[in-house]
Length: 96
Ligand SMILES: [Zn+2]
Image 1 (cartoon, helix red, strand yellow):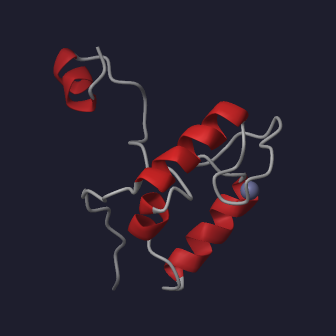
Image 2: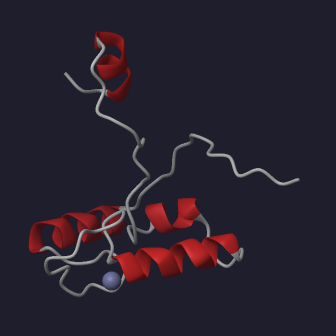
């Protein structure tokens, strides 16, 4: 039985990738296709259709999550769940 796990790690982003992310976020563009996000709710900085296509490509082994983040074509995954309420949880997430 295969179980999917998330492993925390770090990727090195080139200056051009950081500039791509900054430009897209300031102009409201999708990190993947560079078209306007409009009023859609982005997933990891991308249109839902672009994010789902990226997930499919990662599952198929054609791309890696780390490479996509490093190239500035989508944002790192954020921890899910409710916002932290307890002080140590806020500290762990770098909030408050
Ligand atoms: Zn897109």
